[in-house]
Amino acid sequence: MKRLFLATALAIAGLLGWMVWKIPAFDSKPHPAGSFDEALAMFDKLRSTESSLPLSPSGASRLLHHGQKTDRSFVLLHGLTNCPEQFASFATQIHAAGHNVVVPRARLAGYRDRLNGEQGLQSAQDLIDQAAAGLDIAAGLGERVTLVGLSGSAVAAAWMAQNRQGLDEVAILAPFFGVYEMSPPLTDFAGALFSKLPNFYVWWDPDTKESLAGPPHAYPRFGTRCMADCVQLSRNVRSNLASKPPLCRRVLFITTACDIAANNSLTHSITQKLAAQGYPAEILAYEFPAELNIPHDMIDPAQPGANTPLVYPKLLDLLRVGTPAAQFP
Image (tube, rainbow, N blue to C red; front, side, top):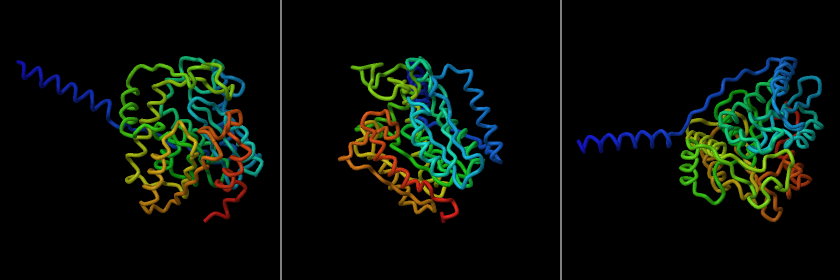
């Protein structure tokens, strides 16, 4: 009887451990717009859905277009606790260079109540769905589509590079593949565990709390489930580096040496592994040097130290904004 009890206990423990440690799968089915008018209709439907939500004035999805399909279109994905306003200024510059731009909102982002109790329930699948919605619209906006993701959404952009046909270029900015100064195995274990535990919130700055300096449209705290699920998505991407080559023409990894949120060493390792595979996709990397003091959020002008007058021109150059699709190989 004791042996039976012990065997049963070990089997249950093993099953629970497998359930926690198993790398989750994610899914996305493309429904690309077939024309410019269809893309506008899809965006209008998206905004109509958002109109019933308690969003802040700056929390909704954005579309900047030129009244017709352009050579290139861009999809910009905001970070985990931010909203489309994060990319508003950068989107304006891309649009001014002659491109159509869509900035989709992630589920549970952009709420008027910055201390809402729902953001922590945002999942990795929500980040993939955010990217998919933008890509479906962008397919009707440009001949070639560039996807740009920041932080957690950069991981979703990396997943799209592995799984979505029809992308021309993917730019991965300050990707949150892992936690700063934490070993990947420990980060992965914590991500697997906390993705199953009840959510709780952590202040970005426990001293200032809701008075955190920075964008007034961003949440001053993050949910543990949301952050852990992003790590789960990272595990999925990393587990498929050898088996799922990038489906796009070009993948660009952009980091900052002063990042104290994401694990740059892990990002560099991913970049090197992809480059070593000899895939047809061009794998490029650029890091803002430490002396520039560029923070993890290098996009939002309201972020202290973002220095967007310096960052934006470099990003626009790396993304070849203003270059017609016809001039690409």
